[in-house]
Image (cartoon, rainbow, N blue to C red; front, top):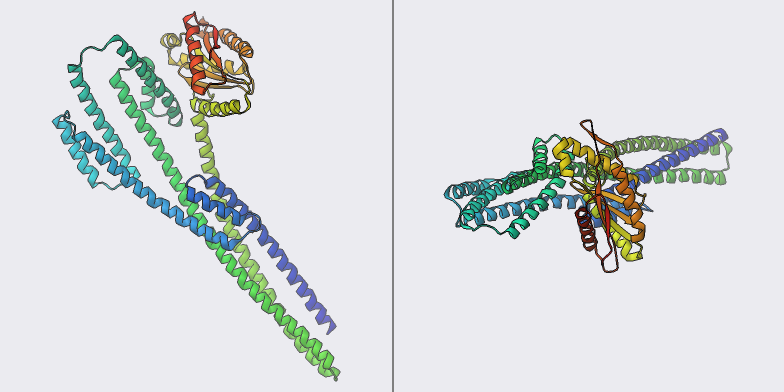
Length: 524
């Protein structure tokens, strides 16, 4: 009898140890799942204010002491919000189609619209009314509306050209300035778009045309082509985002279901263990009562064996239940791990894609230095620091002298190589705290934090000399290339535009005085 009692005690201890081990494993896996969902919710924020609010609630339920009951409610709300967003997209598509119809109707109402073009707009309007409103169908409609507007504008220009007297020299000069400004902006856009789709023949051809020079109507055609390229990129990125959000929604739903199943299983197992423990206590109490009331040793032995047999059966059931629970738990955890691993892979891929896009949108693909977008972000940061702390901040514009002649004499490849080499050499003259970006064409912009007007002279001269000493060689001919620099510093009443204008005036004066020099505008 003593041997059987000790054996049952050992089995009870082992069962308790296995239970504790399973519970620890379950807690570790749940903690891992909670932390991953927390990180995932951070990645998904800023898509929609209501989603952000509910994601914050979910993080509260999963951070610190985990509350899966409330977390499951939050996951349900998130699922509903994602479905609501889909409805909003459909409403927006319908609104876009309505706006397109209004635009075409407005074009039809023009008294100067020729009959063939009016008939074309009427035919397109009928097609538009019969089409199903969606993001994908709206994009070609946008292109057709733009094409119709272009034709109407061309017709209007022809009519006006026959009626309007010759334009004054001043207006011609302003038109040329605007034409050049649009050309420079298109060059910057082409540079960014060309990096994401370097095989696009249209973009390459437009870039070459912009360098050679275009008429006004050709410039408008280039604008339309670039708009189509931008819409193409937007649509492609929209597809990637939709696939990612759909996968995220599906995985969150599966995880929610798995967590719910796990909680139900754990609750049932917990209730069963309570029943087993109650039965064991009753058997032990029965043995104690039998010992207290025993008058016959043989009868006591018989009663003790009966109770021990019941205890052994209870322990067997409990051990079997523990094994089944552990097996079920391991299967659930394995399934959750597979789902989360797949989701983590998709998230990492999408995150890498976003990082790559951010890099391309903030770097010039030719010189691999920051571009105008990156400069806009950096100048905003430096300007806020300057306003808050009052430390010196200076700005310089660096322009390559006679760059057009380099393209004309040595081709675009020679011009591209010149930009790359000069960008590298200017970077060598800068401190780690300084910032340089390609502003556009042959122009660079440099920020000098914590640099006064007096301290600015040394780096500007260093840049000028460094570029002048570069041993360029084109077609076996040594060529000296120089730069002109205009600079200015922030003063008390300045904003970003006013300092840029002063630096630009200084650059203009430097070129007017003979180039290959730097000038600092010290005015306010």
